[in-house]
Image (cartoon, rainbow over all chains, first blue to last red):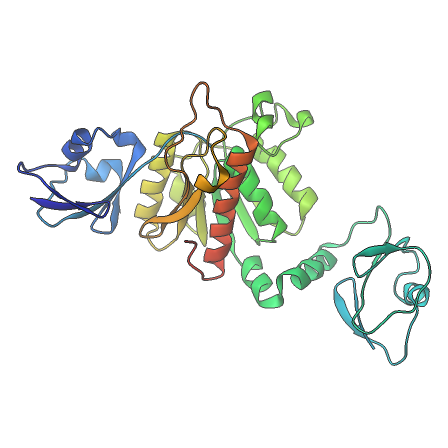
Length: 66
Length: 268
């Protein structure tokens, strides 16, 4: 499965959900905004979404401070 | 002869001297400024001179202040800003600075939400005063904003913003601003707001702790209708606190991104 993550092409051999992808990338899910194919997903919405070949993702990780 | 008196263009058939102008326009003025410099003696005015007549301690009316600001911003720009509404979630280091910048440029309406009270440690970067410690931040901020520009409508919400109440308060804004402190709150607000209002641009911030070089703070487009200010990596943590200069830089990146969006320009 080919995914485009933050503008870079990545290959994955196993099927992946968004949650699994975030885990693999060692990202803290509550601190990440996920855009899948130009659509922002809420934490609730993305819980059970499986990724497909050719999907484009923007993963934006936030750090604390303000 | 044409003069600009308190930013308004005025025409005169004949030449006029400064004290005569004061007598005609504002006899009680005790501070006369010609082309940016205070003047105490009478003098001949020249075509195109800019004269400001002030009575010390007197506050301009809301209409006068607006005329002064309009002259500064050029009319087309001022109209757009004045007719717009901006939502700000969080009134801490980012939100208080952003609200002040947007009030100074005369954004018509600001909706500011924060559940917190002003604490002594906030004063290292947040736009509050020592005599405001203990007040709800949105109340203290409203007072401060009114002192700057009473013409701006302020809606203050002292409540924690959640996915449930977000849409109720911020559904009608032209631009939304994320100004929270905690990373998970930032992500919560952005995900839920852009999900419920995908057509409304949102300006967020991430990474502005410490005293790394100022130029590492950037504005970039991070997703559809999402603009992100900050260095993206420098989290607040023990030994690397949040400090006024960098938080202020990130906040003003956000305020400038808002202004550009209101004027139909891309922030990046």
